[in-house]
Amino acid sequence: MSSTVFFDQECPICGRLLQIRLTYLGRKVACQHCHGEFEACDPDSAAYPPSESGITLLQRAGQLLTPEEEVRTRPR
Image: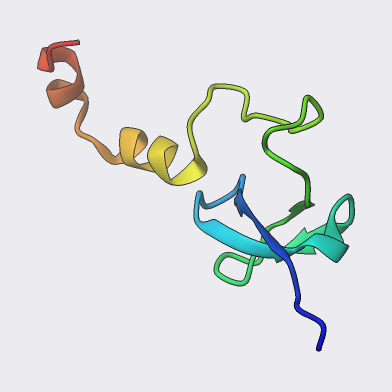
């Protein structure tokens, strides 16, 4: 009986945590939720490409949809 081994990786497009088969490591895969394509890689490795700003696309969309007035008055 063989067991499939998975690793967890966050989709760089939508931010969902995905379980990816170890056999797909280093290959191009697609998120089942947003259908965004990215390379499956170990997040603990130096080769893992972090997002430019460290935020996911959904977080950025939330920032853009927040009224400008609220952003200016929100304490940091």
